[in-house]
Image (cartoon, rainbow, N blue to C red; front, side, top):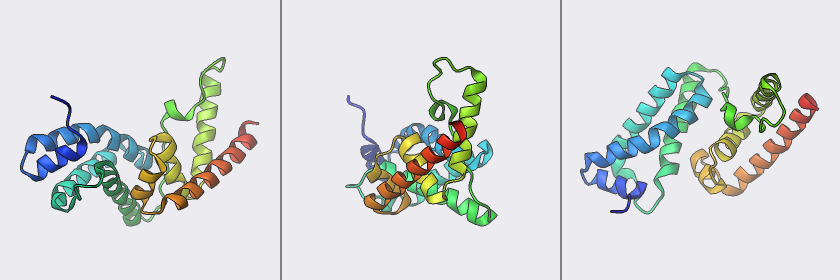
Length: 180
């Protein structure tokens, strides 16, 4: 039997199939942990947000529109919980980037040069406005298409493309300055 899509699993869960929910959790929890860890910089907080995300998915399961994709809906819930965390804490979110994605290929660079590049990218990302940083993280680091990023951040695809273009341009300027 072919593997069921996320949307099929969600429809099955809404219909009472609890095994479908467990399968969705298995698919989404690792992705959500990576996403929330970069924003929250705390495994404990990230786990809490992932749990809250699934609690909200459960609570709103009957609101899920069967003709829509599940992934943007779930990621939107998670990102809203991250934003809520920072609103409660009244502090600006910072981003912990995944070293494997932020550093250039090793070629002849040693660990010190790699670490310097990672730190330069991290510092440059921190200097971006939160709205641009969020778009870069979802588009570049999470490999999400612009249409999906737009759904997650609650904006139009065109606005997300503009934010991304400006962010990539700014990152390039900052990194050229820092790394030469």
